[in-house]
Length: 219
Ligand code: HEC
Image 1 (cartoon, helix red, strand yellow):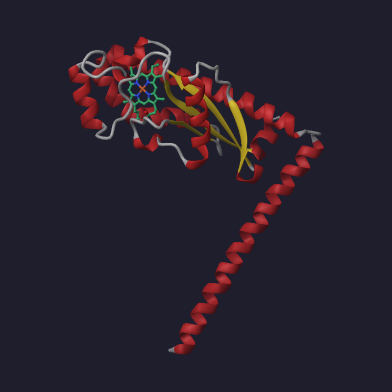
Image 2 (cartoon, protein in one colour):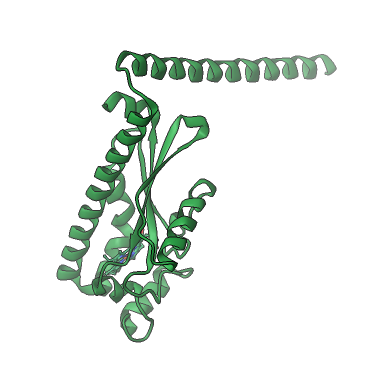
């Protein structure tokens, strides 16, 4: 019995060791690959960051345009209450469709409606920065920051409420959000925090993870 136990422990340990060292090897290969193509293309860090910023802007613009068009169409077709169902089913998948392979696009907010949009630790400093800017009436510029040891570039851009159109679902309860809409929102999103906003408020931000390797390849 003891021998079997010993054997299985040894097996487990060696399996873990093999798995870990394979991962390390893959990481190193990726790292070397990125370095080689950076050198081949003579790319500086500044060029890569600029590339990530431009790409992030393009993706955020496209995702935003898709969402707004789909939302307006849903409201025309089904009214504001019906459009809530549409958003619940489609908002996240519409955004994911815009993302090329290997890239993650999210909308995040402290005042989230969908709990899946709650910020991760690495996203919080940027939300805080945008919140500070909005409170102090400073302009917010889109941002790119290296995370995960520089292997990933995180693009963020503030989302403020641009006009009254949004208030039918994100405005004051009882006046701007109609009673029927409010009832539906409460039913669909019991933890909803995305209400009582005014035009100009920070609603959240775009958060796009761009692996450095993909950015280098695209340049
Ligand atoms: C028809 C109602 C409706 C309108 C109008 C609307 N939204 Fe939303 N919004 C929603 C719903 C529902 C969700 C949650 C979607 C989900 O479940 O993924 C949401 C989610 C969001 C999110 C993601 C963060 C979160 O709270 O989960 C942002 C950002 C957002 N809306 C911004 C806006 C902006 C800006 C406008 C105006 C241009 C707007 N919305 C107009 C219903 C609406």
